Image (cartoon, helix red, strand yellow):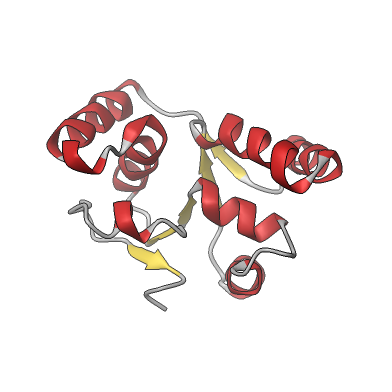
Length: 137
């Protein structure tokens, strides 16, 4: 299973994004289901609406409602782990979203994290050592 980060989902949806083809290939041909943590949903929705357009924003909402992505609504331990990571990597300024993505990937024992944010995800010692995709493929 692959846990999706905000940047990866945006690139997957936005055909004009320079990473679009890599994420589309990973999504369509990768052979693993994508799980989206709850924390990325408002961020993806907002960024689609602001930078890609209302139609893309509505299509993402429709896809979510239709089950195109598996959603992970989290567990209480995720926030504790996310806060621990944010504190441990204080200089990176991970923040809630990135830290929850990592905590979710750890809990689910994900094989990979789909991300464009190698600065943050590449610097954190993530339990289980999931691949950072598409970089590690």
